Length: 297
Ligand code: KIV
Figure 1 (cartoon, helix red, strand yellow):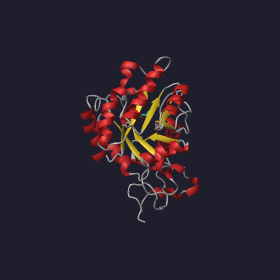
Figure 2 (cartoon, protein in one colour):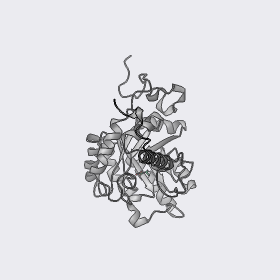
Figure 3 (cartoon, helix red, strand yellow):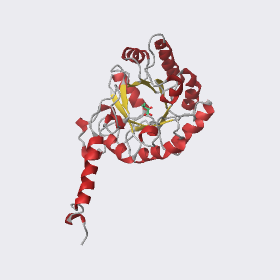
Figure 4 (cartoon, rainbow, N blue to C red):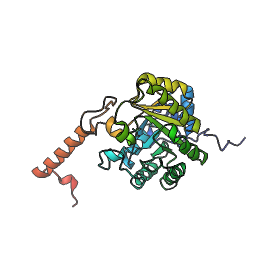
């Protein structure tokens, strides 16, 4: 019998980058695979009760590292605004600024699902505006899905995108693009809890394949995760979500200043890079670099 072309399985075997052995790989990748993670894989992971990690990525080098480490979903987030582009918020980020980053992340990976964030002002106006923007991220950027901020008010946008063939990840709770209205604070406390749950349910009903829950009390996030059939992805939302996401510069300790309460730093890249840069500058000043091994005869 010939394989069903619509089924994500079975998967041809291919060696992993950096030659990790199959048993070291997260099972979401289904072992040694050569295709990209599909939204169906994420649903299957929820159905199996298997947790997974998502990270932001904005460039070729980190995307390659995160892929080799087995991260199944990379988000080219508008957090590029305050992590790459030098803005103090995500509000000024434009589609034209994010597109080259999406292309770089797509070009330098072959397995993670790449999700492009729809920037502020590029989708709120109407479902048609959202479709025009999302189509650019898929056609010009090569992304396989988009993410947009907002609850039930965004349901018409989600419906049109999904019915047009574009997978949509929702995002409720703290939505940084609205910080001028809401401030950057925990969302969904008290009576707002039911509103947040309804927002998440509305996104699911509109066809979203997953929902980010940002800065939401842990018990509410757990409740939403139980009520939803689709995966929830928490950031500052406790351990009860199906998946977790962090901004990579926070996770790796490159972001300056005190880490946010919900961030766990897994490295001190800022310290490592500062030490390396200082040592390099010292070597040049003291005549230790370049040495004989760094010169051509
Ligand atoms: O832009 C971003 O990085 C995000 C994540 C924090 C979910 O939206």
